[in-house]
Length: 424
Image (cartoon, rainbow, N blue to C red; front, side, top):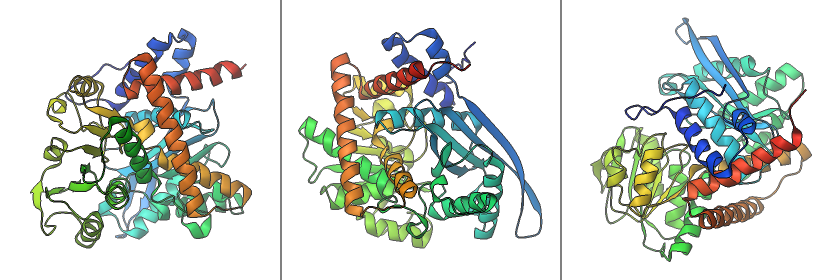
């Protein structure tokens, strides 16, 4: 019997949200009950508890997860995050979202995700390396270049992927660059990968603005989350589209200037000072206040469950481009739609990262690499094509962009599952 999770409006369960989003699409598709049972749950879940020797000589036990949702369309693909609040249900949801994301972009991957419960901001570089290498060893039984390919996510980066690749390669006895993506360029990484997710956000915002007749030159933008995705999206929307960035935030809070913030200066300031607090020519603002600012484009690029039933009615952006995974709950989606706020869903808006990860994987496989210009051109083409497909489906079915994206994704994965059949 399919697992059913009940919604908790006070503390939304991400896996329950992911399943409800799937159910909405499955109902409209009149999906066969047998297919629904297969696609509604994860295929494989690995939980590991492993020791790491800390700098002071003590040993700490960490908990990590690697979850594969579906492999019907190809090897599993998904990031690894380090965060104190990582949970199995969160990783399950993220793996499911990755399945749909890859299907929306027509990438030959299924969905996976991984995470370790830790606070990387309190750990030294040596401790993080030890944690990464031991975690990689623990999950090496299910990852591989043709089975499950990890990538960076929250609080992980190219260096993390280098350690993972090296650890996996040491176990095999030879270098296997294609086991992970998001690596440094010198060891098989791809040009354009670092900016890919934020660049993809910019491309879909450009497409939606064109559809709405919104001029991006001078358009106001607020970005929640100033990490790998948010900082790049802010910089590109500012430098390539002429947008005015009026607010940005990180985990400590945000800064606001109605006349505009230079995102490049903000990035350098935050790296030098550990946060955005005190940024010159700005005033402090909370993450909650940022979400309800009057602006043309809101980019929630932090963590999940940021726009909920409690605050959705106060969101005043014209476009919400989901740079993060799962930032908007289903209840909030309904409120935003009623208020005329257009949401570009996460499984489309932030798919630039996995798309260029696919390019990196292909390049590693053939040991032939493309230029950054070629990468960005290929990314732009795929993002634009996928945006138009989602838009056309949403208009044809008279549904939101999110539901339109899910209808495309679920139907593609369902078809692959039917074609392959059940084994044995």
